[in-house]
Image 1 (cartoon, helix red, strand yellow):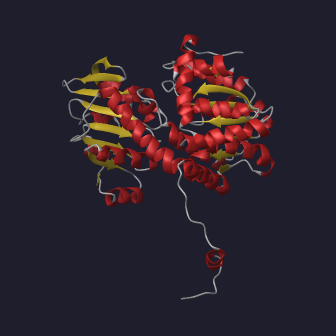
Image 2 (image 1 turned 180 degrees about the horizontal axis):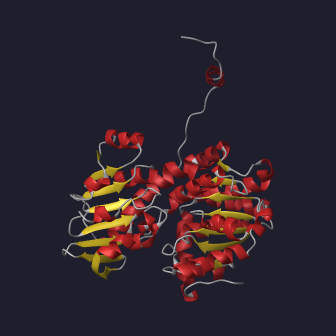
Image 3 (image 1 turned 180 degrees about the vertical axis):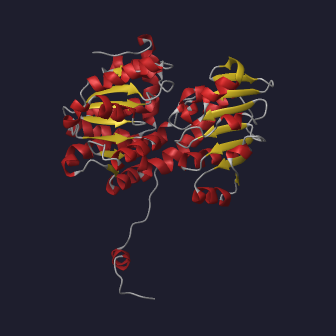
Length: 418
């Protein structure tokens, strides 16, 4: 078995953490049990480019139980949990190519390993794997029945590919499932991003001006958590509807150029580049802390800050201090990469339970229906989304009402008036 991990001696600790996460993933666990009996992915080669975490490990075990031949590589250089990677290799015999802190050369070498697997299906988190296959390995395209995409950034890239008629196989946007973005993005990203900021800085959040870049589902979650910890939350947006929603939710809304002068902590979550740019750094307070929880580190223009700085040093793990000519210090968290995975452990397992249940069932759906799908981006079928919500409620001991026959008839009719 070909693999590339940091240290195999970490495997036993990784297994314990994987087991701990599995306790909080009852929906995925029930799918794994069914997959082990039915083997719906039998013999399918699946290349997965995802964050190598305890929750992802349980998804890999589920796919493996379903009969898939799986390879896992990192989707971000700082998001790998090395003990988890070691456990998957040694205990589950699942090839992993991922090392926390890997440089760009190693990152792309690992992507090549996923491609060398000659996948029939892809599971991507950010679209790096899919875009590389389309750019450099088009000979593989005829054998790929489809793929899934985990995150907002990846879905944006895939929709651009589909718009340009460049997408060569169907992809299911797992990110857009209601049981994913309403919960994982809002509650998972909100909590884990705050966790990463605090672990990296040990800063008191109460009383700080906390600037949230964007007001999508991830940003909503972070704004909610920051306010809950006593911060004065400021939201920046380009979309008037989202900006209006932020105002109605009780946040201050202003341009980033205005927020830059008063913010203490900044976190971007937009999926776009240079949300924090040179002209923002020029007016920031001494000691400002700037992080990102969007998928790629392009949201903060770090090269511009490098040019502005007269010195740079690492003052804490995951905190780089840039000193400007006038003596002001700007602190970049986690090298501008996903701070919730760089400095913390990512989302809690209970919320990833739904996200990865979507991944597993979307993979099964592709095996069953890929021939019926065009080369486009599709949402998770509604019946799958609802079934995951039902199973999650069941695992939580929550019972809900069902419509009576009379109520169903009423909702489906148009003849009854007031």
